[in-house]
Image 1: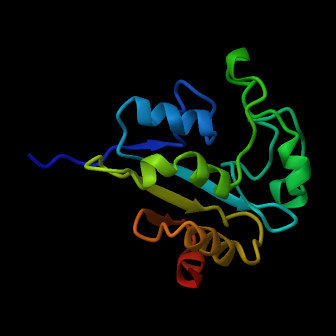
Image 2: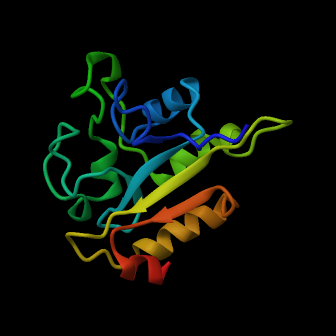
Image 3: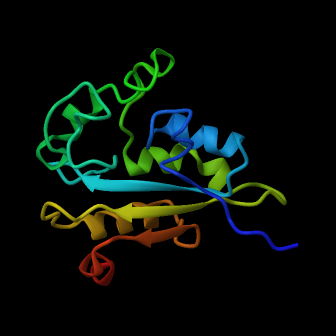
Length: 160
């Protein structure tokens, strides 16, 4: 029997901090077929996985993602707002997400590989090069067949 694919929005964000590796792993444990995540660029052009334009809602930091370096982003706590059990959970880079889920993305044997919907977050600020940086990371891990790109911006999709 054919059934729809189940993608966990920002991972298992009801039970773990959204867009974190903990949320993505929990989604797998709960039986999701894949995940949806949001990607933006840091000031130094590293694709990081976070939904909001700013870090205030989901971390202990302040500022726009596009104004922070990867070093500044890496020092933020993206888990404590959800629960003390997730204290210290970082904002991951897109590469870190792929690395942490590689056994799900490219499973051995008959296991079903996951699908990742990567949403390109380009709505509020000009994000020069986001699409190319994301495509570079996807190619580095040879995941072209496991990734769906989405965006509210038709221009971002055209550039991709």
